[in-house]
Each structure stands twice: as C-alpha cells, then as structure tokens.
Length: 155
Image 1: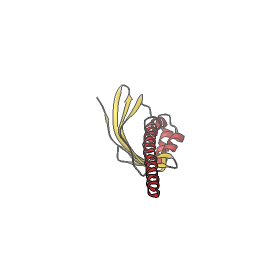
Image 2 (image 1 turned 180 degrees about the horizontal axis):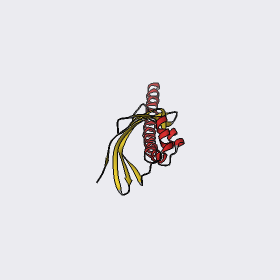
Image 3 (image 1 turned 90 degrees about the horizontal axis):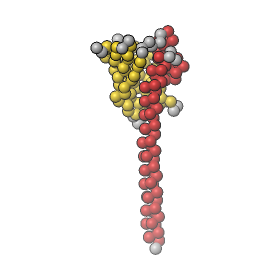
Image 4 (image 1 turned 45 degrees about the vertical axis):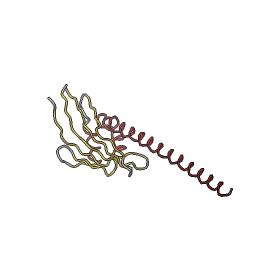
C-alpha cells in the first residue's frame, strides 16, 4: 500500500511540474509577442516621429548612451551627433514609412530590426536599407547600433 501511495504521489508531482512548465512556455511566447509589438511601434512610429518633429527627448529615450551609427556615406555618428543633428534640422519629407523585413529577439535581451525606409518628397520616392541592434536595459529597449546603406531615388 505504501508503494502505491508513493507511486501515486510521484505521478501527481510530475503532472503538476508538466503543467507548470507548459504555463511558463506559453507566457514566454506571449511576452516575446508583446516585446515584438513594442519594438515594431518604436521603429515604425516613435523613431521616425523623433526625427520628423525634432523631438530630442524622444530620441534620447530611444538611443542608448553607447549608440553608434554608420551612415549611407560610411560616416560614423553617435548619440550626441544625432541629437544635435535633429535639433538643427528636421526631416522635411512629405511622408515616411519603415517596412520591417526582419524582427528578431535573441535570448540575451538583444533585438535585430532590419528593413527598408520609404521616403516620399514632392511625389518622388527614395528608399534606403537599414539594420538596427537594440538591447533591453532596465526594462527599456535602447538602440545601440544602426547601419544605413543603399540610399537611392526611384524613378
């Protein structure tokens, strides 16, 4: 009888642990989905808004203190230069859309966002490619690296 009770108790513990693991996995997937939505909003809405509206407070929140950027011309920039740039010059395009082609969150709280920027000005479209690395620090995603290339005007 003691053996039957021990076996029953063991199966009960295993069953509880399996259910607990399933909940953790489901929660983990749900959190990744929410984090991807936050990143999508940051890249498609907030980042362009900061440049368009010359919002240095918003851009300061998005960029990490260690942010670096390689421009289309191969020049290196950092957070201070980007903040100074938008203080002096706002974006004057008619419209802008960023098309995300890759959005991935890695296990070490690092995210990759890459895609195509579409700029329309005076009914002419220009595009560029960019990739961004962000790190989640103290619960906030911070951009630490951006690379822009392939800027071209479309006919």
